[in-house]
Amino acid sequence: MLNLSRRELLLSSGALLLPPSDDPPTLWLIGDSTVKNNTKGQQGWGTALPALFDATKLKVSNKALGGRSSRTFLTEGLWDAMAKELKKGDIVAMQFGHNDGGDTFKGTRPRASIKGNGEETATGVVEATGKEETVHSYGWYLRKYITEAKAKGTVVVVCSPIPRNIWKDGKVGRASGDYGKWAKEAAQQEKVHFLDINTLIADRYEQLGEEKVVPLFFGDHTHTSPEGAALNAQIVAEGLKKLKLLP
Image 1 (cartoon, helix red, strand yellow):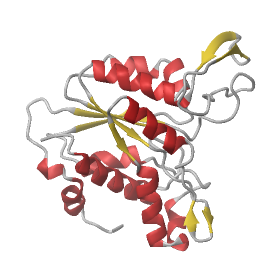
Image 2 (cartoon, rainbow, N blue to C red):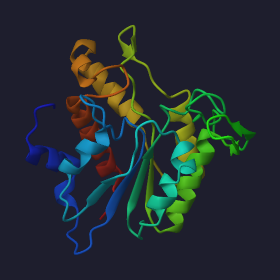
Image 3 (cartoon, rainbow, N blue to C red):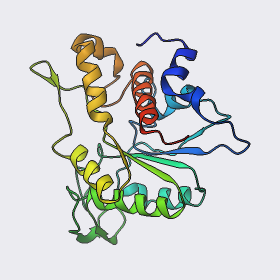
């Protein structure tokens, strides 16, 4: 599956099935460095995804940014800037979770959201900026993006975070008990599509075996190499095709 020709990848992703258009819809991607990565030797799946689609029928705009969480993608104004460009018929796909842990207010990178999908909040002063902020749950931020994207007439796809290269007894660690679970709940509550790429990719890794998965990552157990990004992009494209988002 790693050596498919570009035409075979296009076929497998459903790109050739998309309708021609003078003004094709845009697939907008938001997320963290596992979606878009500027570190040498590492690449996110969102960077590899456009090659799998015919740009005359579907444009892909990758607005993900390394180091961001579901919370900081909002507080830094990245979401508001992108939302202005959304048009009816576009698709918004989101994948967060890898940076939603850690510090809430203290330290140089206070980016954590509250674990879960509830309405609880925490208010405090962000040490790095000196500004007060009310922090919400991971699911709350996803639901905010979903609600505002739907208001623009877009189709929304919530993705669970890609799995890390962490194994135990021959199995890849899953996010089905935390961020994958909460992402699914948020999608169900807002009645939008959910794409469980955490499970889909982990299943593929286990089929390949631990040794063959090693070169799919670079530098650590979280960030994929270009080869890993290509594989993950193919799995995402296949998943999007099955959702039948377009005629």
